Amino acid sequence: MNSDVTALFDLTGRTALVTGASSGIGAGIADALEGAGATVVRAGRDHARLGPGGVSVDLTAGVAAAEELARRVDARTDTVDILVNCAGTNPRPPLAAIDEALYRDVLAVNLDAVFALGQHYGPRMAERGWGRIVNVASTQAHRAFGNSGAYGIAKAAVAGLTRSQSEAWARHGVCCNSLTPGLVATPMTAAVLDDPARADYFRARAHTGTLGAPADFAAVAVFLAGEGARFVTGQNICVDGGLSVT
Image 1 (cartoon, rainbow, N blue to C red):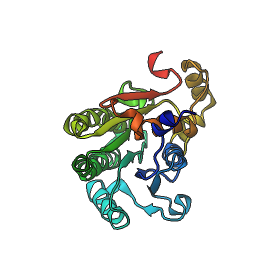
Image 2: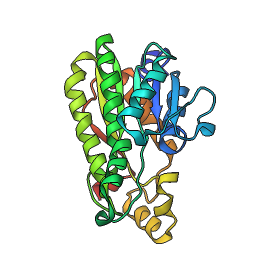
Image 3: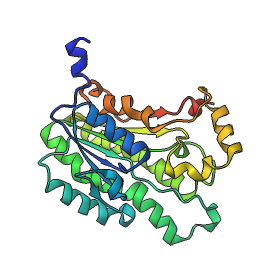
Image 4: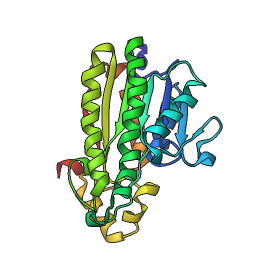
């Protein structure tokens, strides 16, 4: 491959922080960034699955937990060049059954922590003149299905937050984008995929006729994290097998 092209995807010398990295899409993205040469700090709830050097964190405490995570990461590394916010929770009760406590818990992980980590690292990236923020949104940010509830609210806000981050920092070399997965086989979607009829429905809706897998996010994550994405910002990129356009 031409060396100039290779450089567009080479993350050697970059440091990435990936939340939700103990399983699913977050783990797949962390593996991909590491494979492209980045030093990856993996953060998540399941320490055993993070591997050596992982940072245990429960982001249900929202801003406070995110700030504590940032302090612990900053004690390990001088810079975070790439921030990937993938931690999430989706308990899926009917909307009428969501009380304030559950509402706050869902927003704490899916939105408040994303905002707080962006507020911490975005300005630092801008000061250095280079950075990448990738926020993982959801199809439920754009359409309601499967008891979207508070999760749909949070993920819609994540897409809006990403545009605000781009407006604030892209002129300083910090590209901010969101990813929208389709239905991907992960621990968080097990409750949906345990129903064969629903799984078949989503396969049929996707143009590919398949469900997604965490590995499907490898290439797009490396692209958005690298030099090749320097003119891509404020965008929501659907990695969903065509589900979003059916």
